[in-house]
Image 1 (tube, rainbow, N blue to C red):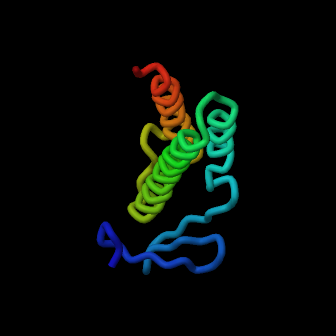
Image 2: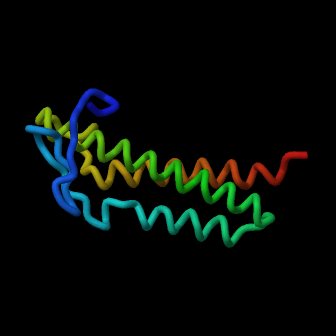
Length: 117
């Protein structure tokens, strides 16, 4: 039994399926690599000591990963319940809005962390 009470299986390298239910196909575009690279480039191009950069890299990458897991979960549940994504958005658009929103908040917090005394 899964965390939310649903059983899921990975049927092959690209498909996640609810037992006796719908499935989603995960390809490289679904992994959020572009957003993760954007965050990586931002942190590496900015000021800060090595340990602080590694900390912020991990915070950002984990945050983006969590947003992606949430998106995949919502897509799978929506498909299984024959429901549309919120606001009629495509799931990739939904992910981009949430992920880049999270990155912009992280960018603000990263920059603000240098202004504290």
